[in-house]
Length: 118
Image (cartoon, one colour):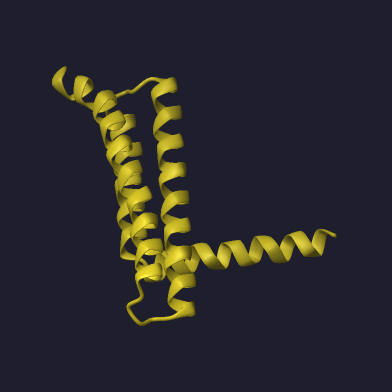
């Protein structure tokens, strides 16, 4: 039983490494995430604000990972331009866009007041 879970964890880790190596948007998210964490320390955001930032980072990376999985799965079905596959990719990308806009608004609400105090 433990071996089965170890293999699942290894596969998940391999997926994470693959995403980091091959997906520019994934690296952008990680870079912005690190910038947010360092900015949080520099600007002395509260514990609760840090929880929100970490939650935003986690959900953003999760959605980006799902978006990437959908893109890869649809490419495995057919790399030709097909309306059904285009819709799946576009809707998946839209989910990330909606999230990114919301996360940006929340991050600005946390960081801008702190920056204005400087």
